[in-house]
Length: 132
Image (tube, rainbow, N blue to C red):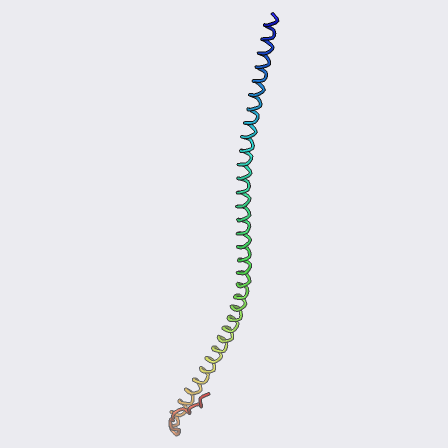
């Protein structure tokens, strides 16, 4: 019986050692898999972070470009306003010149009618203005 007890003890020890080896190798396999999975996740997060940084830099560059464009737009608006003011002055001068021309044409017509009625004044060519 003693022999049987020793045999059972040694079987139990072998089974315990086998179980411990299985548990140990399983733990090692799990840790290896877990480390690989963690490494993969870190790689994914690093890639996402780099993409986010690139996107942020692109947005920042676009923002700076828009600010620069806004400054140019303000300069163009100022030039346009100056051009509009100049156009308004020119239109007013044109209208004044047309009004003066109409007045002068009316006076010329009145003078022609006065000459035709009396017949004493000969029609002559209008005087030429000197070139400016």
